[in-house]
Amino acid sequence: MDGMCKGLHEACGVFGIYAPGRDVARVSFFALYALQHRGQESAGIATSDGHLAYLHKGMGLVAQVFNEENMRPLQGHMAIAHNRYSTTGTVSLRNAQPYLIETLHGPLGIAHNGNLTNVNKLRLKLLQRGVGLVSGSDSEVITQMLAFPQQSNSWEVRIAAFMAEAEGAYALTILSKEAVFGVRDPWGLRPLVLGEFPNGGWALASESCALSTIGAKLVREIEPGEIVRLDAAGVTSTQGQPLRQRALCIFEYVYFARPDSILEGQAVHLVRQRLGEELAREAPVEADIVIGVPDSSTPAAIGLANALDIPFTEGLTKNRYIGRTFIQPDDRLRQMGVALKFNALDANLAGKRVIMVDDSIVRGNTAGPLVRLLRQAGAKEVHVRVSSPPVRHSCFMGVDMATQEELIAHRLDVEGIRQHIGADSLHYLSYEGMIRAVNAGAPRPMTYCTACFSGRYPVPLDEAWLQQRKSRKESFETLRG
Ligand code: SF4
Image 1 (cartoon, helix red, strand yellow):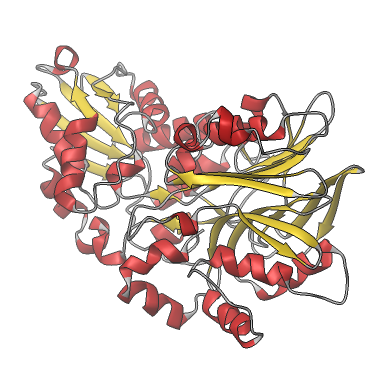
Image 2: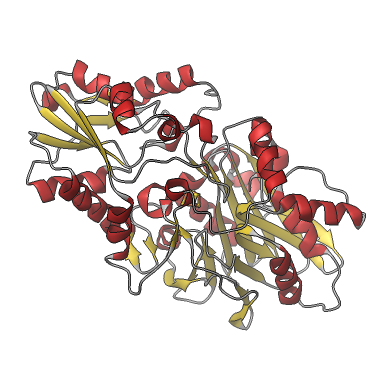
């Protein structure tokens, strides 16, 4: 389901490219376009020709931020780019990325996906060193930490020094005078992949779908704790920090990633189908049709329909051009958003017993209106199946997910939620079923961050920072990259 409706927002997509002879700004534009689902608040591209760096960023969708005129000055053979998503609190250009500053070592640009969980400690350290900060963003903290003079002139040494101090989630693309870097936190919480162009040149992206869009071939994932350098010598790799427990965000499989992306060697679409198959095994029900909430729930709905041998069909159509609106801060507007965004296909629904598959229920503001929509269209029964377990805990690793109190599964049990949304039956996929489905196609056994389902956070959480986040909801927006 669309994140805008359910109050679940991926926080950012990042991209990087080193490709002499190519129009790197234009390539970055199309990569950001492919990563648009990861962030719709702002977009930006920073380029470098090895001497000077150039930047353009703005509020809105990629296509709204860039045009031929403002892309013309973005010269050079290397670039980084960023899509940002935020819907709570104020929306501000100040938080748009990439950050680009001048340092002792030349220009430095940063694009960040994730959330540092010890950012307060790091901020204090910078302030004590006399570094002025202009925002509450942890991405600015990263930028300033990387700029800080170290004994070595090597960027790898400075990046490793930052990694030694940082805790939490970060997938970074970094632009310097001579190279582009890709960095992933030691847990590998947020995805980052490496691609190669057939005629020379390299790219980094949050998801492989961006590589396909720009004609690059997926080479591999950046490993947790790894620093990859793209420059005239090709690709070099150093381990900035040892691998901690592998903890890729499992929600990437459930909802965030595009279905045509490859994560850890698995096609996301196939994993989602398996989530649907598990769901069918756990909670079969007699019905005439299976529908998915467009678009992200479609693969799980197909998997469930195949497993139950019930026809999959369209029951809801989505207006893809409503797009993101900045005006939806409260529940009433969110509910209106459902009506604006979805229409029921009466011809397919009238008189039918319907299984509606959704990938997750977060706040619970969308499922109820959708069930009503199906009933108004004549559905005789509506059985809701959710292809992930109940979301009971907030995310502190870079996903804007609502506070714990706002999570419907934190307040109500499954029967309470069923009554709230008005379904004839409701079943969430079990935790074990989700892990089984995700691991079934993995080339080797993997571990994941599942904290929003299980409450087990893979990274240490700073208590003072947690309190700050809980008490100042509006500050979420400035704390996230
Ligand atoms: Fe992903 Fe949930 Fe972990 Fe956040 S808490 S990183 S959304 S699995």
